[in-house]
Length: 79
Image (tube, rainbow, N blue to C red; front, side, top):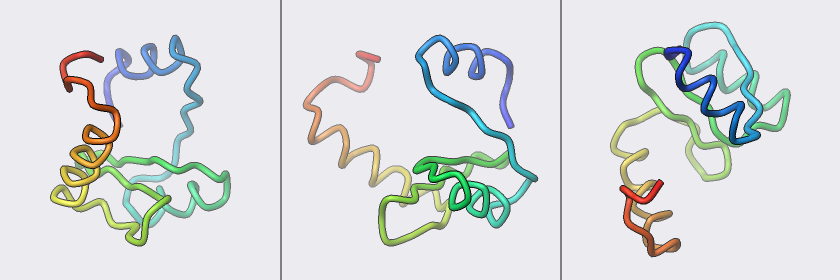
């Protein structure tokens, strides 16, 4: 759940957005059904399906962002 700005930005970037019922359980269920690798819910949880954990934990999200940032070697403010 987010504002229309995110939906427009995703569409303009060619990112397909799907909707699921509220809650990590339902988001993950939709992700598994459609093959999505990234999901989120209305409480700000971000769910990565490509790792070992499918929780929406904020600390895990921060670690994943740092991991990606380390690989890309680009300022987080760049994009």
